[in-house]
Length: 156
Length: 357
Image 1 (spheres, rainbow over the protein chains, first blue to last red):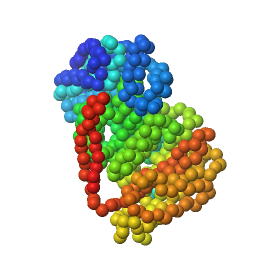
Image 2: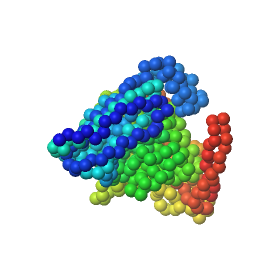
Image 3: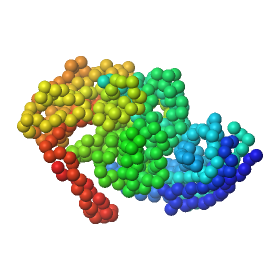
Image 4: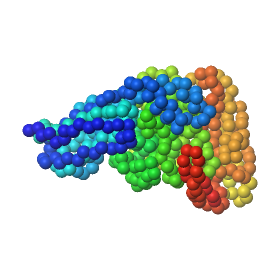
């Protein structure tokens, strides 16, 4: 039997950069496989004028005075600016890993014998689980995400 | 003890790398490394088959993880289990450092001056460090052909400034190696002087880097010693106080041009060997590749640390080719006391830290 545990869509804005969104949910039965479908869009900031402003503001903060103008002249080397949301998983006893990568669409799973790269395999334990979305950078005015978490009880 | 050629900053597809641990280890073997640290972003799951990969490839693998936070990237080595980076805010890094140390690990700033968000999220170090004694090392050479990069030159200056302030912090290189791709650019190596015992490579590497037994290079391995009071002190050691503050010491340095020589290329030339210290450059000597080493005798008065640097031409560019971590000199007066004060600037309020003995 497959049980949909979390089904959520959300919208985030640049002000949400450097925040975490945690979804806590109850897994009623131990064992089986957890499937996590996660996506967000858009990935890239296509407005190059806006990107140039953000890059130049960043270089003002990060580059020393004498090298700043030279760095700004190469602002295009930083294109495209990207949204980055990563996903991590905690079970009732501890951490089960993270999928820290740029893919804007990820289909992840955890089970007793196998797991997606970044996540730790091991039997699923009944209790409160947490899936955390870490918003490293939101550079587009609007970014929509979608998260579905399933428990496939019969899957080993 | 043995010098081991290490690559201390790598990734696999368990985070955002494009390689398996097997591919990474085999690639490192082909480049003449003895040892790699797997430092995936915010996960340690890539280590699940570490022992099998070590047996298969003959590569030694150090357990690590790169804290890939919103406010800085911090490479950790030697921690056996995941330590959570997510609760750590820009003022909380000391809590994170304490947990790393409680779990037997060490931590270093990764590429501290690489431009950060939104170009490279969290890549620029913005954590507030109130006590630099808590930091174990700084990755001063990041990526390939490292000494030419402005961000690395700035990190190297930061390291030197902290040594001058009296902190004993190690310096390393790290390629931040994400995929197997050919590059013509010179690669950095961090040599760690590891003890010979039956313990794990992770424990040996952590012990070596904690003790500052590290030498970084694009080519030959540079070594440094101090003769004092009938004893020879090596990289990372602290020379005890002498009978008088101006007691004479002998510095000796040598570059091993046989080390990994199939994997780097330098034109024939006369190099420059520099002894650099808190007093600035104390000596500069010509150095030939077939030299057995060179020695300098001087007073230790005022010396708190000294390192060796090898300068020369590589790919037509004159630059630093290798540097050692320092040998330190104990001084009367003991432990560093932290001064902590705040100033206001056009960019807001900043806390400044100094020290006094």
